Amino acid sequence: MEKSVMVVGVDDSEHGFYALEWTLQHFFSPSPENSPFKLVVVHAKPSPVSAVGLVGPGSVEVIPIVDKDLKRIAAGVIDKAKEICAAKSVKDVVFEVVDGDARNVLCEAVEKHHASVLVVGSHGYGAIKRAVLGSVSDYCAHHAHCSVMIVKKPKIKH
View 1 (cartoon, rainbow, N blue to C red):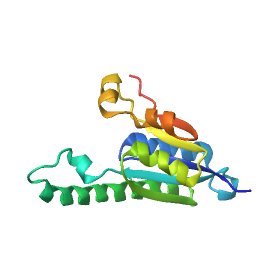
View 2 (view 1 turned 60 degrees about the horizontal axis):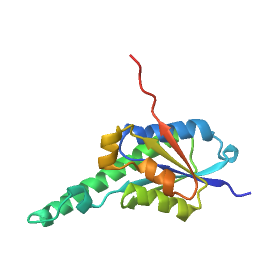
View 3 (view 1 turned 135 degrees about the horizontal axis):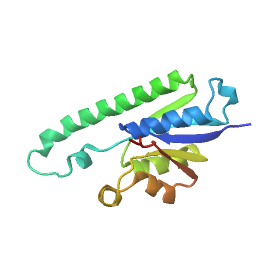
């Protein structure tokens, strides 16, 4: 019997890594044959043009520098995701870095891998920040063609 696919979206935030750790703790065991899912970890690398935000005089020189930095960040995200998986003894994992907006990249990864579950972290933005930046989890909940689990990092109460 073929396993269902679970896609986990990670970014360079503590929220994304927490979602991965939570998912591994709750759905994966150290022995791969006991896990009901095949795991695919996806990081969306923004384009340098979208990261710079504008194109104009001087952008030709800046874009390669920004692209190099975005590639370095993406490699770091995947390295940390690999460390988290190794620490939980989860070895049967596919790691992908895909260029594009996280909303589209994650929904496309669901289609590509025929995933039955998409896991994303929640940054916990307020209404204004969410309206300005957009919510990846909200978009995916409405557009992904599978179940979407939004993992929230618990807030520490004082």
